Image (spheres, rainbow, N blue to C red):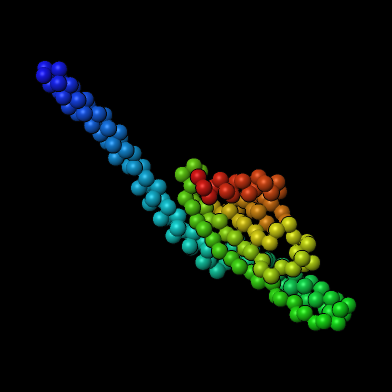
Length: 182
């Protein structure tokens, strides 16, 4: 009977110790998120700043969008010429579909870099194989420092840049991905 009492007492004591040991990490976890409200606040501020940059009526993004629309217009003419040539050969008229420009952006506050980034993406839609042969890809990505407004990296239709200098496209894409995920 004494052995059973000792075992029950040992079990109760060990249960109490286990609960205390588990409570200690919970206390540590409760203090860890203290740094997150700052990151959360910076993320909110970043979103507001990125909206301002995206909605500007002049500057880098407006100029870039104009150049993308110019590329789309030239490629549309190329597709129309291809369609006319194909119609002359086959006798069947197939109208060319105009190339469209789709755009969008995502913002991200990066604790790793301590910066607010805006990732602007421009995509050319309806690019046929003939007109598209001059492009490496049909989308272009710009990584912009949303506070200073400077271009950090470009993963363009055919060329890539890092910090304003011509770069390997894999490096530019890697920088953009890293900045937007860390």
